[in-house]
Amino acid sequence: MMNRILTAYVAFISFLMILPIAIVVAASINSAAYLSFPPAGFSMIWYKEVLTDPTWSEALWLTLKIGAAVSILSTALGVAAALGLRAVNSTVSGALQTFFLSPLMLPTVLIGLSLMQVYQSLGIKASVMTVTLGQLLIACPYVIRLVLASFTGIDPRLERAASILSANPIRVFWHVTFPLIRHAVLAGLLFSFIVSLDDVNIALFLSDTHTTPLPVQLFSYIEQNADSLGAAAASLLVLLACGAVFICDRLVGIEWLFGAKQRSA
Image 1 (cartoon, rainbow, N blue to C red):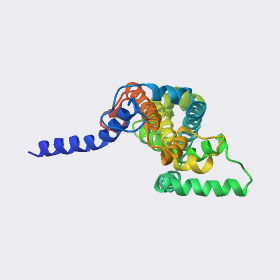
Image 2 (image 1 turned 60 degrees about the horizontal axis):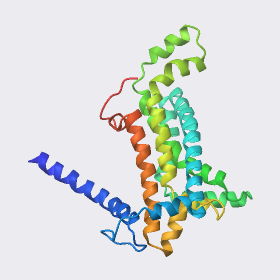
Image 3 (image 1 turned 60 degrees about the vertical axis):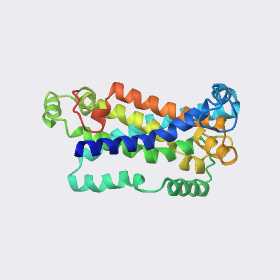
Image 4 (image 1 turned 180 degrees about the vertical axis):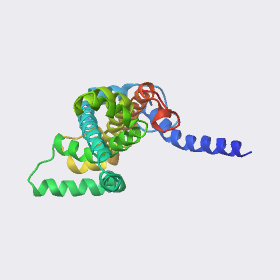
């Protein structure tokens, strides 16, 4: 009986999650410009417009560039921070973890507004750099958490043995530690890309008319126009996010990511 209730609950939640996405995707292939469900007819014209119109295509390309920069930088900084947290004692590590993870506890609107005021006080104009640095604050914590979790499965004796054999810390990391945490690093890289792709609030405060990522462009557009073109742009964002999740599943494994399954190094 309990299994049936849980199955029904999961099915209901899945339905609520999938239905809005399905409606948006269906609207994006609607032959009519206005939103309708079911679609009045099938057409890919709105995707073509998003990919060919300079306003939309430049926003999409900018989003991919910022996402790539955020994922690479947050992964490098997150791994370095996780290594540092692992090296200090538990009391200090706990306090620092709370500090590093604190951006996840704050509304992104507050983060974006605060950074905008800081940049303005320093005379820094809105640019790709300001958006990238802002999104780093909410992407790095995911990398830190994933890498720290992966350290729990590492036997410290392996690293000590390498050190005893006269390997310097860099060689120990690349040849012993990194192979054991590579799945967490890759997951953090992809998660950071998704976080950047999904961000509207921080980018809204830290971008301008010359540096407008696709989520911000879409947000501004649908304020005035709720039509099939906006649905096509939103569907592209969903497609990119699903692609990142698919890659993560193929290379890392969703079961490992959520702790349901151990994966060998």
